Image (cartoon, rainbow, N blue to C red; front, side, top):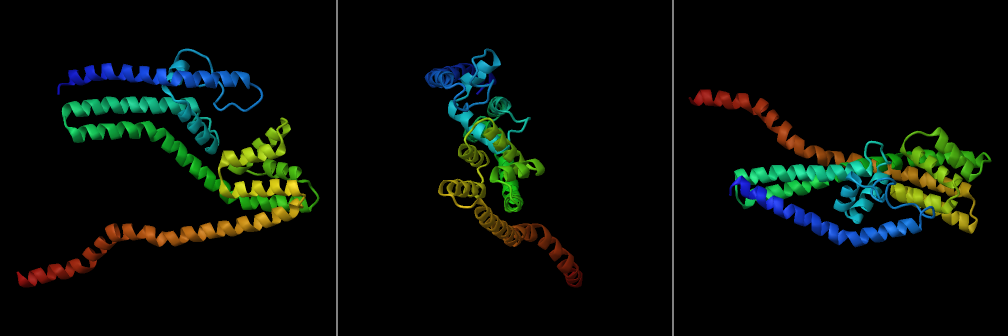
Length: 295
């Protein structure tokens, strides 16, 4: 099929798809904007201020029209898990998704025009889908790395807080000390939690928000234990000591698990890369000598 035909089809289909997306998402976006206007100042907004929820025009309006609300909420959660890096704002991630998908669609159209057929069309579709989800995959990978860092740092922070509480400090003072003297992702999250409490947010809600932002199972269990101890009047020093011992054991178990996975991971490179070269070095001279003897 000639290239001009594909260009014509794209010129007809793409505007219709955008129009359908805008029409289907307009009602939901209007409800979201109305709810945000009514609850402004009362709850934390579900989107990043100044991007999707704003009533601006131009590029922001185009981005709001092309992005479903569910996708925006998912990206916002992934950005929170990744630690809200300055270079990966929600606006940049969403624009990257659209630009990469558009570039992959253009290249796929040219590829199908040069080699028409069902396999080429499937390759083009897969390339567009992969390019659209590539920024999310990068953001998810960064979030996973940050979660692992927080899980490794948690036992040491709990030990520090246990020592501070047993020395006579209160739980909030111990938490503040661990946040100000610590470094890394967990210290940043603790500082943010302290800011939430200082701004007037209830302590239990601030701790629950900490567990929801990080999405670390060990930290979620620790927050649940602290909230339960606060409700039932259990001494926090005992809770911290038990949680620190448990987290330390889990960290050792995770290290042992990773060590046991090493032989399995090494098997494939050993069989594919090292073993053939070793066979050539050991058996090669004998085979060459045998060929010379028979020749």
